[in-house]
View 1 (tube, rainbow, N blue to C red):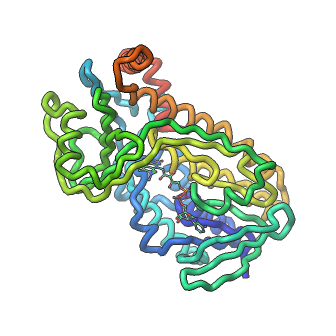
View 2 (view 1 turned 90 degrees about the vertical axis):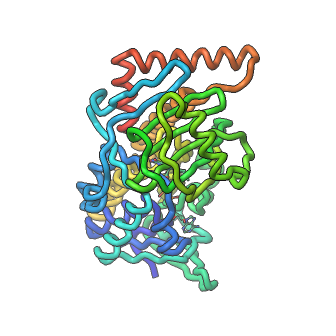
Length: 392
Ligand code: RFL
């Protein structure tokens, strides 16, 4: 049992890669720990950059997002100094976001993979990976009812996310993992309510950061900065809305559209980058390769970009017998990953100032204010922001 390319994980990374490989006539097989219903309902990202939309469109994978996705070109910043809107679609490369919930994209990609004759095994966990430093890697899998099976392939694409198996299959001597804890946490919320303003608003407030991100006409994502270790259950709907109104300065800019809070979870802002993101016949893609804080909404976009690069490299190897692009996979991806990390890190420092009255906190908040002022007033700064915000 097996395929030329074994893929662990049916998130954006694994599903885009699988679909692009099938389009090239390369047989592949996806194993996914969760059920189909679970992955098709898991709400996460929503902001797709221009490159992502181009890759999906070129791969014949954009039917749903072109029909139901909404284009957004503006974000707003609310600070103690007032509000300013940045129409990033008119700056930089003139690119916009397409807002389309990740779970809808995953649903479309699963349907397309199956329509192309793909083999996807849900409720099947990858539990051990061996032989990636040789020519015939083997993947041990176990289904929810305890059945184990050994799959063999010529290549393995590790697309199983931050807590997956693939990243642990690279020996510590073969790669380094650079980790950064940004020491900031967000309460990530989904509210059954239409958006309250233009697509995205970032509020910088002495009580902490608050964010607003459009998703669909009936659901909006909000974020509230909270102390590390916060229990999401301590936040009732009333407390959430009152804090959002405070930090979004509703008294000045108008009330938010309230609705039931459908989901509340704490996300600790952390990043890590593995270098290299390949080992023998194993190639890491998406969150498995590099975790990025959601501050600039880059994670799913990086996953799609890497999947496209790996699909091209695998195609050259399998169909053309040319393994050079595969050998260069990590070197191709890492500069783009670092660039996205740099921008996300800059966004964290743009949006969060340390609390308190001690000298360092006051100094850092001074820098933060200057950064926001530069973004408000400098056309060149806005061009740079736009280029990095929508692009990779
Ligand atoms: P995924 O989506 O986590 O998929 C990995 C899949 O692998 C499965 N798996 C296994 N399968 C088999 N065997 C095993 N041993 C396995 N272990 C795990 C899992 O069940 C899962 O189905 O990784 P992928 O494909 O790399 O995609 C990455 C993106 O999902 C992620 O980067 C984004 O969601 C991050 N992100 C955002 N990214 C954006 O580009 N724009 C956004 O607006 C955005 N908002 C967000 C986000 C992430 C968030 N959270 C939850 C951290 C908002 C939030 C709140």
